Image 1 (tube, one colour):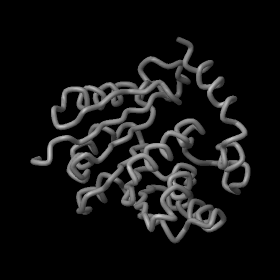
Image 2 (cartoon, one colour):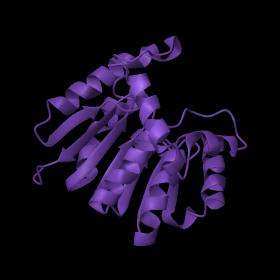
Image 3 (cartoon, rainbow, N blue to C red):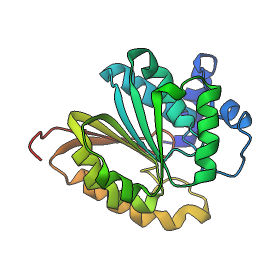
Amino acid sequence: MDIERVNQYINGLYATRTNLSKTKYSEETALKDFTPTIDTEVARFLKFIIHLTNARNILEIGTSIGYSTVSMAKEIINNNGKITTIEYDEVVAKQALSNFARENVDRAIELKIGDAWKILPSLSGQYDVIFLDVDKRLYPALYEDCIRLLKPDGILIADDTLFPVVDLDEKWRYLIPYIKEFNDLVIHDDRVMSTILPIGDGVTIAIRRDADL
């Protein structure tokens, strides 16, 4: 199966139904030097999961300019939901805050600036959904904290987990071993039920099924 061709076909079908396209969002963002954001089809999937599960407490690890954050916030804002999102780069975080205000969802978002591997251990509570889209080298290191912070039946979603098999730009290929390690952690973890979906560059969805961690 040609994943890129499949994604193009699906995006074409939903083109007139997408309220917040990646292209439009990026064009309206003044800052042009930032970590790539999720694809539009992944944003659509996030909104679907949030609606399906009625998620209200979301943790996002890796904000960038906030495209994924805003996409999720537009789904939860009418339910008094909240997104806590973490971004390492202060300049990019400042742009994300501006974008949140522009899209009128800033009241539903708390942005933490700093290293995710330092911030996560300080967090407590139970999240309905955790979305992982940070530096891929951190995926394996952050996995245990992600599981700890998920409520029973909570959902972990990780982007770019098909890096080992997609047609990846040479500059990103050094990240493949970290994604392979992360995929192995998820697949062999009996505390979760998981699968990988061939949308974007691969999306892992894992449901925490063991309340006694």
